[in-house]
Image (cartoon, rainbow, N blue to C red):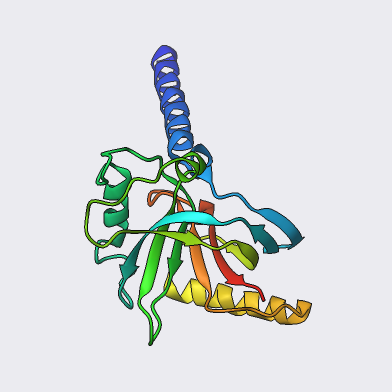
Length: 198
């Protein structure tokens, strides 16, 4: 009985170790992330300086949350649906601009630094464009959980209140950024709302 218990415990320990390392290999820490410099940090709030970034983008209609296939359009591009049939590494974050009354939404994958500095392959599929995201200063708030409309709206409200307290003036609509694969548990997820500063 003792020996059987030891075997079960050994198997369980091996499974836990395998699951941990499997998760680490697919977690956000294994991806290149867009560079930025933190200018000020206070709890979940920061001001950051971003350089120009190159993004593969696609439009997302109002309320779609990318159910229209926006994520998969971008994933197909980095998986080889481009003029060079080149596989491009996934990066973080995925930037999302919600649709407004007068403008469609947009989702964007940050292209790796090496690809951006060399030659960016043109998309071969419909609905994907290559765009430059101008750098600048941003106010940012980080929050956990799933990126839902209500949680993102609450994070934006908190961020705008913090900006007002600091005397920071925003320019344009807020954007969202998600850093984790879909299978990451909610409490471990990293989400952000960003507002460009004047």
